[in-house]
Each structure stands twice: as C-alpha cells, then as structure tokens.
Amino acid sequence: MGTALVKGQNGSLAVATAVVSVRLAAAADVSGLLVTESGRVRSDADFVFFNQPSAPGVELRPGLPAVLAVSFTDVPADIAQIRAVITLDDPTATFGQGAPPVAVVGDDSGNMLYEYVIDGLSTESVVIALELYRRNAEWKVRAVGQGYAGGFAALVVDHGVSVDDEPPPAAMGLPALEVQSAPDATHVPAVSSRAGDGAAAIVSAPPTQPGTAAPNALDVRTVPGEEKLSFEKRGRLDMRKREVAKVLITKNAFGVRARVVLVIDKTGSMIRQYRQQVVHRVVQRMIPVATQLDHDGTLEAYLYALSFAKLPDITVEHSEQWAQTFLHLSGTHAGISYDAMGGRNDELPIMRDIIASLRPGDPPTLVLFFTDGGFAKKREIAALMREASRLPAFWQFVGLGKANYGLLRSLDEMADRLVDNAGFFALDDIDQVDDAQLYGRLLGEFPDWIRAAKTAGILH
Image (cartoon, rainbow, N blue to C red; front, side):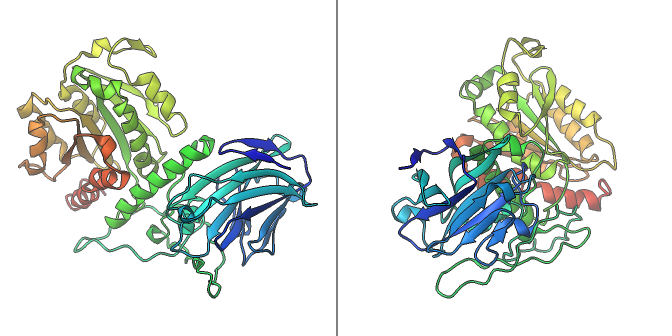
C-alpha cells in the first residue's frame, strides 16, 4: 500500500526507476516535460508524448492511458524536474465533470509507492499531476495538481514550446510597431491528431524573422528569479503574463521594451488601501507588466506624499518581501522615514524627478501612477504634463478607491501637448477587476502613444 499525498506534499524516491500512471474515467493522454532549473525545456527532445515516446532517462510505455517510466541514473545532469502531465482527449471536456484523476507512483516491479488524488479541478482539461525532482543527490516526488484552464497549448507555451494559433487581428489603420525579437522558442515536433481522440494538433512554428516578434506563439517572457517561485506562484504569474501579452499582441506591440516605473500614493487618505493590503496586491499585479516590457523585468518604485522616496527596484523573486518591507504610511522602515514624506500629496516633486531622468532619444518609459486623487496644483501639473509630452514617457494614472479625481479625468483632453502622453481610469475596487480587464485598461493607450511619439520624433 502506497503513501497518500496531498497537494504540495513530497516524498523520497529510493528506487532506480519510478513509474507514473494515472486512473480516471475519461480518455486521456499522459506526457512528460524534462525541464531545467528555469522551468523550461532545453529542446524538443525534452518533451515526451505519444509521437515522441522517449527522452534521455524517460520513456512513455504503452497503456490506456500510457505510463511514464523514469530511470534516474539516465536523466541528464542539467534536468532538474520531470513533470507528468494528464491531458483529456476530448477538448470540450473538463476534469470538473467527473471524479478526480488519481496519479500513482510505483517502482519498476509494480509496487505502489505514492498515490495522489488530484481534487479541486474544475474547468481545466490539462493538469500537471506530479513533479519528480532532484534534491542534491536524491530524487523526490511532489504532488502538484496544477491545472491549466487554457488547455494543452497554455501549458507547453509556459514551458518554452511554441504552438500555432490563429493570427491576432491587426490594429485597424495603424502601422506596425518596430519591436524587439521575442526570445527564441523551443519548437516541438509536429503532432498529428489521432482519429477520434480529439487531441490538440501542435506543429512546429516557423522561425521568427530577425527584427520581428512572434505573437502567434504567445511565448511570454521569463526573467531571472521566476524559477525560485513556488509552483503555485509561478503558475499565477504565468497566467498574468499571458494576459499582458494578449493586450500587447492585440495592439501590435508584442516585443516592445520599455522602462517601467511604479509610483504609489502614501498619503493619509490611503490608509484603507494600506491596511487592507490593496497596494500590496497592486505591486503583485504590476510585476507581470514589467516582466513583459522592462529590459530586465524589474519595476522601479517610488512612494510619494509631500515629498517622495525612491525605493529599491522590485524583482519577481522578492516582490512579497519588498511589499512587506517598504509599503508603509508611517514610522521608519529599512532606514526610510515615512513620516518625513508627510501625509498630504504634492505630485510635482515626484513627477519632476521622473521627468529629470528622461532624455530625448531614450527608449520609452511607462509610468504607472496609483493614487486616490487630490491633485491640488492643477495649473502647475498641467504645465508639467505639456512639458513632458516632448519626452519619451507615457503616464498611466490609476485612481484607487472612490474619490474626486478632478484634473486626472481631463488629462486625455488636455490641449497644447506635442502628443497625448497620459491616460487615466479609476478603480473603485481593484480586487473586483480581473486580470484581462486590468491589463487591457492599463496598457490600452501605451502602444498608441508609442506610434504617435515615433511620428513626432520623440522615439526613434
């Protein structure tokens, strides 16, 4: 009798060969992904499925469904994890429609070592059931149970492979942006759907041409530090990155690189947003924007009131620790006096500081400015935004909570600017807005500004 695992639990594998099998009522395929510490495959040889049933140390043995056998001594040294995947044959079916699938790990003699009932699934049609991974010289198993509502294509893209999709609609009447090439994607061999099984067809996408992006592949960008996240956090980050990528694809801006600056209001009227950690969640939801736009995937960060503090950059790996360390309204934390910044707002100092960092001809900058309003110096701010319209930055202001935003609402119609360099929208409750809506509103005007800035000679 094997040991029952629950989600997130691990166990030792003191065997030479482990065999992963699954039990479920619906027809399904089993496949395997051999990934490095980065969580990505090295090449198409690291993807084991019915058309490519073996990889170094991993074999897909026939069965209904097939079983995945792993000979640990034959697994290459740079492979850190082997992920066992279950994919429903019927693309219209979901795991929530039947009893939970069961993943079983045994030895090569048929003895059961571990059993994992993958409960909690609903709309997903593909799930990473288990992860076999190295810990120093030892191999272990972890119960993962990570479903992908987007299906098999979402999963393989997240692991570095490319999937052919319908091309995104071109922006009507707008010239294409010049974008940097997306990172090279690993291409899986062509998969022909077997008669009657409903398996998704995956084909090798043509190589990306120099100087163009690969939006059809939705190959979201991975930055250093992601591999150190827990699998659950990595999955949530990946899904958010995909939503960011969808917006950029729709706006013909996939692959654009820009400096990303985050500014957060620290005035006393924001006390509810801090106490309820709304601003903490804002940080987490802005990180995927930086990973897809910023050259090194980090967020430059400021807090402001009457004066401001330039904070350490936010990285993927340490974002939660960063939020706990630096998001405060008062006191002294990490050597920063929050009381000295004051409790009322004056946007001019922080805006002037950012503007002073901009130079004509620089790459684009996207300023994400979160505030609950109260812009008192309307004439001065309007003059500053007119001045800033000649510089390579777009200012996206976001109102948090119910407030009177006054000047911010009129920024889109402000006259006498070289280009429209600002946008604004208010969120009564950011937690009630899903990622697709949030990123659509947050990034909707930025590509249009890039085109206008190019035409006006602000960007090259």
